Image (tube, rainbow, N blue to C red; front, side):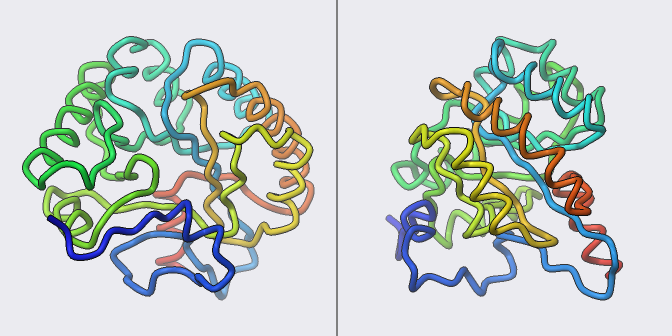
Length: 231
């Protein structure tokens, strides 16, 4: 069905892989000619009634922003959390309605998944997001083209900022990974649902003040794109 399938999670664990050269695929957003340092925390698979509010509390306490890629089915179940994400000036991205492996679907089915996710978010907040991230980081070039054809930006994450929180490495390990590899324009991948996310909540609580202490401003992906355009 697809000419070449990419598993970005596996690729990020391969030392030889240095990133995609295709400008249609957002992995990180390099910044130049600016004294400001920006970084973006992103959270996939939510909203979750236990973990997402804790992450939002930490962001609020630290005056930091983030981008949440929402699973449409959960957005329908927890509309008040979706509303809170937006009301506190964070950004929402589309992560499909039911979180399938996209390469098992044809392009028409993929479009239906994305639009169903969009509709689920719209029911909660009357908001049309323009960022899309593929479940499991699995995709093909044809899928990138389809996503762009329905007016979404195709967003992954910085290759070195895959902290593997789903493997439960411990919050200290996650914080160390982020601090050691942070650079201006980095996009960090974490998850606020899909399993026990206590470590992610704790890592978020620890890492934000430390990043701010290093001079980073924590902003949304769209604001990172704007900073890139003006750098």
